[in-house]
Length: 145
Image (cartoon, rainbow, N blue to C red):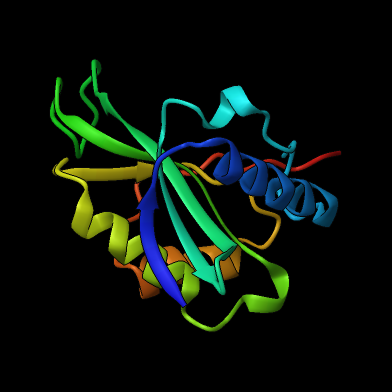
């Protein structure tokens, strides 16, 4: 397996869209829809490849926090992870963690942020807090009556 940052060329975008279609079909996240080219373009793209086939990806971009929150000072540049995904048959092998760590070691921003809408909150919190060392800031909880 190879982890690298790639340019958003047509082949990479095509493979990322195909993977996002698989993700949408899983129905594992609230409201997730497969990506279009414009969702990916303009982001930094990190991929996990096996035999030159992308089996996982992470993409995101730098943004400046205009509003101060309790943990990130106003006007601080952050790398916002928009998506991280690993093919179902390749999960639980450290690929997501390797993608995250590679991105973390590559980007220059002091903070990394993300939001998630997963239906499996226990697994995702374990991954982000226990596996990659993020901290918990806030949560939107809901209950349908």
